Amino acid sequence: MALRDRFSKKLNCPQCGNEGFAEASEVDDPKRKHPDFKVDQLPRGFGVQRPANHQENFVIKCECGRKFPFRSVAEAAAERR
Image (cartoon, rainbow, N blue to C red; front, top):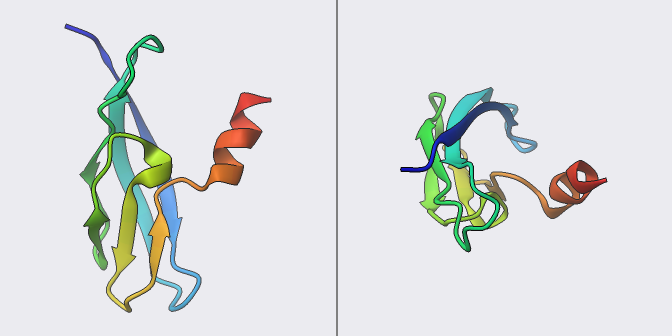
């Protein structure tokens, strides 16, 4: 069984200012096609709009209606450098 990387991410809604920390995890095996990304806990006021196996495709929805990816493509590119 593969270990899971766990991490926290600060969520901040640019529309209403709602914010908090999400707890997430994914499989720690770069050879896997799908890292099995999961958000284990969301702060109050946020929910899952569209679950996905990758952070960049996982969509969060704020209670105000604003939708945004859990992790933007720009964040992913900056981390690869």
